[in-house]
Length: 482
Image 1 (tube, helix red, strand yellow):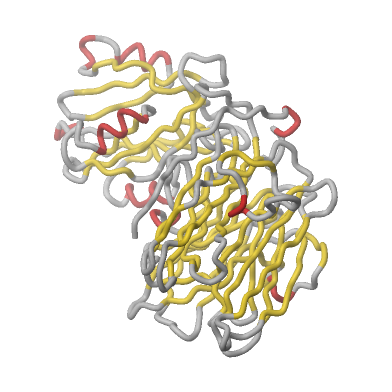
Image 2 (cartoon, one colour):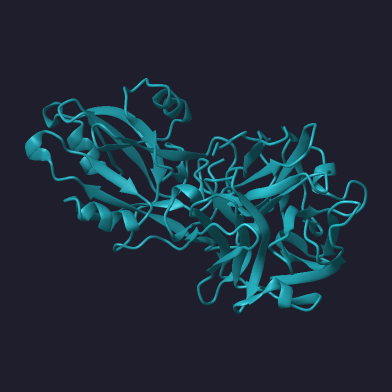
């Protein structure tokens, strides 16, 4: 399916200093599942947070939006689904699950995620409504908006239904109360934190059912909800939009909404990683905190376009004024079998357009670092290039940088790339992301190349191909690079 990265450009946000200790250690737990053809039925998929963590939100991604429909995307509580919970305020969830219908003739892989944090003070506010069956007037409609307790805001939320074979998810999104309470009513751009969560289902079956909605709530300051411009979707087509939090923030939740209560059925609603990297591009594993949200819907309208609105909940975790952090993007050359990193978005776009030659593709293994030369923790990273092996190398060690600058080294100094913290006794500081270094051991073939990866599963995979593991090279920032 198509991927969209319509970046919502926003000004630097004024962050409250007291907010920065919030949600330290947030991770994204991703689990991938193969869903068989099941039209007329459904499949449930789930991801659980580690012990001591609570679920802030979660979602579902896939690469088959024309074939798949989401009927539920909701928190779990000790393995028990949202539908089984009583209405009212209860303790925080510890996992996430989704119900999905596969209308294709073959298996399709889906990716369910849970955004997990080792924090206290998070609660779930739960509400429900009976939904009529489909009849002569069309499909039954259910809409529920649940509010957070006083003094708390919505950082995530989800919806569940009693008949997932027939009740399709139309909306799962922040709710604001007052004038223009629903996401589709809001002005595009930065909005206040939601006061609750709203859900809409279209019951296309012949049996009545129940819609249950949960708002995940906490007393957190500085929360912002980013709202997309409406996306116009033609009948028989799917489309969506991705939003990214500003630098220094993490994504804790997100969703989609439409003014049409039946036409636009959700196919994807998922957190995304730094640099618009999607769960669909990764294997099962535990990853850093997400940086944004992507949602997609398929239009079943008989005629006329329908509008989809996407929302993203951002929580500040660090002071990161504009220009102080960068995203370090990774590329792989399918011809050379080499990896390359750049902290320049412009250089990355040039590579996409062929400026560095053929064969380069983005891996999605991106991380956040400081801009070089600023007063921030860590060391500046020197970037070098060698013509012989047609390869780049990066080091944050001053002596290694000085040695490679020697004319006899065979390396060309290309400047400072980024600034980043270094490991201490092979460990990274709390709430940073280890960046592992590997070497392909092909010096004898004039083909040396290093890879710097945040995904530990890549270490074993490359070792099996003959690469040498050289330990943790850097400790990246666990938040959005903007």
